[in-house]
Length: 347
Image 1 (cartoon, helix red, strand yellow):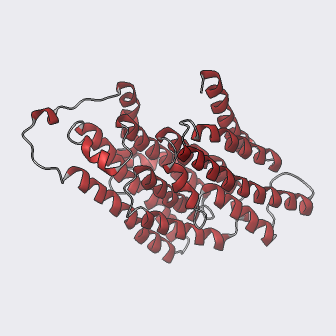
Image 2 (image 1 turned 60 degrees about the vertical axis):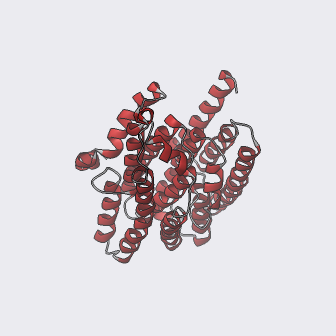
Image 3 (image 1 turned 90 degrees about the vertical axis):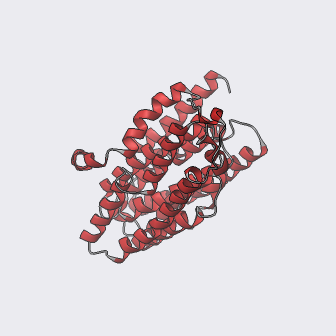
């Protein structure tokens, strides 16, 4: 794509999300979601090949289905209330349709299958946008209608997403699929606390975006796509592999890294609301995600054979500009746990 086309596409992507964020009119929010959906399809197909075309097609079909269900629930809401603004309705059918459509757009279980396939079929940059920016608009709608959410469906989907997000990543060797399953698990953590305190979900989303961008930027530095290629980086660029693995462990929620903070805050909030079994189950499921991150760390750094070839000990950064961006992101994603009380106060 040329520069003008790229600018138009990314501007439309940003404007679509912003329209959804600032609107209180159902039709404008739906239009913002559609602009965001249509503008990311060329980004997913940036490298034209059969795999990216398949990924873009799967993404379009899933999102179009979710948009139709959302539009149906919006029209039904307008018929019952006579207005397009967001109001809190007690109609169970509308609540169910709204929740289902937004769960499908976010890629939560049981509608999670498209997330891994689409992420695997695209480039690292496209996958990063898909797993970070594209989550903002649907989550903002969920936060606005949180009093009207179908709570049993939301809790069930959150628990199932956390389970499948940890379980699905156990047998993966593709790093993009691992990050996609991690996204599914993190979305489950955000949704389980949304009905109790949406601000905690927003805080979790901000930290998740920082962590995910840090990991994708680190992988993009050496173009790592599989665990095998990641293990080869240790002999050529040890600082890069240390950054990648530290960010992965933070994404898994290992204390005392930054990624531990949102899980701990969510557990505290759930316990305060007398929900004991839910945080216990989610903590046990989160151990699955942490397990495959630790296993990845072990297989990458502790299984290298001794060598007398001194050229393998030389390392350098392939992309100095990327490292300038990666350094502050790594600091934010690994060392801001002591600042969590201050951040929560600001939030």
